[in-house]
Image (tube, rainbow, N blue to C red; front, top):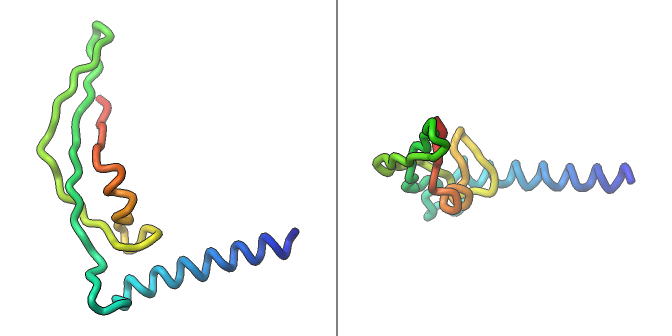
Length: 90
Protein backbone atom coordinates (compact mmCIF):
# COMPACT_ATOMS: atom_id res chain seq x y z
CA UNK A 1 0.00 0.00 0.00
CA UNK A 2 2.85 2.39 0.83
CA UNK A 3 4.42 1.68 -2.53
CA UNK A 4 1.21 2.60 -4.38
CA UNK A 5 0.88 5.88 -2.47
CA UNK A 6 4.54 6.66 -3.16
CA UNK A 7 4.14 5.98 -6.90
CA UNK A 8 1.00 8.14 -7.10
CA UNK A 9 2.63 11.04 -5.26
CA UNK A 10 5.79 10.77 -7.35
CA UNK A 11 3.70 10.74 -10.54
CA UNK A 12 1.82 13.87 -9.45
CA UNK A 13 5.09 15.60 -8.65
CA UNK A 14 6.53 14.73 -12.06
CA UNK A 15 3.39 16.01 -13.82
CA UNK A 16 3.46 19.25 -11.79
CA UNK A 17 7.16 19.88 -12.50
CA UNK A 18 6.69 19.10 -16.19
CA UNK A 19 3.69 21.43 -16.36
CA UNK A 20 5.72 24.22 -14.74
CA UNK A 21 8.70 23.63 -17.04
CA UNK A 22 6.51 23.75 -20.15
CA UNK A 23 5.08 27.07 -18.98
CA UNK A 24 8.35 28.60 -17.82
CA UNK A 25 10.43 27.60 -20.87
CA UNK A 26 7.59 27.96 -23.43
CA UNK A 27 7.40 24.38 -24.64
CA UNK A 28 6.33 24.42 -27.49
CA UNK A 29 7.88 27.73 -28.55
CA UNK A 30 4.93 28.73 -30.75
CA UNK A 31 2.43 28.68 -27.87
CA UNK A 32 1.75 31.78 -25.79
CA UNK A 33 1.61 30.60 -22.16
CA UNK A 34 -0.70 33.45 -21.05
CA UNK A 35 -4.22 34.42 -22.07
CA UNK A 36 -6.87 36.87 -20.90
CA UNK A 37 -10.34 35.70 -19.86
CA UNK A 38 -13.25 38.08 -19.32
CA UNK A 39 -14.78 37.67 -15.85
CA UNK A 40 -18.32 38.93 -15.21
CA UNK A 41 -18.77 40.14 -11.64
CA UNK A 42 -21.86 41.12 -9.68
CA UNK A 43 -22.80 42.09 -6.16
CA UNK A 44 -25.52 40.17 -4.33
CA UNK A 45 -26.91 42.50 -1.66
CA UNK A 46 -29.15 40.97 0.97
CA UNK A 47 -32.08 43.25 1.83
CA UNK A 48 -33.92 43.43 5.14
CA UNK A 49 -37.02 42.03 3.49
CA UNK A 50 -35.17 38.77 2.83
CA UNK A 51 -34.84 39.39 -0.89
CA UNK A 52 -31.56 39.72 -2.75
CA UNK A 53 -30.73 42.61 -5.06
CA UNK A 54 -28.17 42.07 -7.82
CA UNK A 55 -25.91 44.86 -9.08
CA UNK A 56 -23.88 43.94 -12.15
CA UNK A 57 -20.42 45.40 -12.67
CA UNK A 58 -18.36 45.93 -15.80
CA UNK A 59 -16.63 42.76 -17.03
CA UNK A 60 -13.02 42.52 -15.94
CA UNK A 61 -10.14 40.88 -17.80
CA UNK A 62 -8.11 38.37 -15.81
CA UNK A 63 -4.82 36.81 -16.90
CA UNK A 64 -4.58 33.01 -16.89
CA UNK A 65 -1.99 30.41 -17.87
CA UNK A 66 -2.26 27.48 -20.27
CA UNK A 67 -1.42 24.71 -17.83
CA UNK A 68 -3.00 22.00 -15.72
CA UNK A 69 -2.15 23.61 -12.38
CA UNK A 70 -1.97 27.23 -11.16
CA UNK A 71 1.52 28.69 -11.67
CA UNK A 72 3.21 32.07 -11.23
CA UNK A 73 0.20 33.39 -9.29
CA UNK A 74 -2.28 32.82 -12.14
CA UNK A 75 -5.17 30.38 -12.41
CA UNK A 76 -5.33 27.88 -15.28
CA UNK A 77 -7.34 29.01 -18.32
CA UNK A 78 -9.45 25.83 -18.34
CA UNK A 79 -10.60 26.69 -14.81
CA UNK A 80 -11.33 30.38 -15.43
CA UNK A 81 -13.18 29.77 -18.68
CA UNK A 82 -15.61 27.47 -16.84
CA UNK A 83 -15.99 29.79 -13.85
CA UNK A 84 -16.17 33.18 -15.53
CA UNK A 85 -18.97 34.58 -13.32
CA UNK A 86 -18.00 35.82 -9.86
CA UNK A 87 -20.63 36.55 -7.22
CA UNK A 88 -19.66 38.96 -4.44
CA UNK A 89 -21.95 38.70 -1.41
CA UNK A 90 -22.53 41.81 0.67
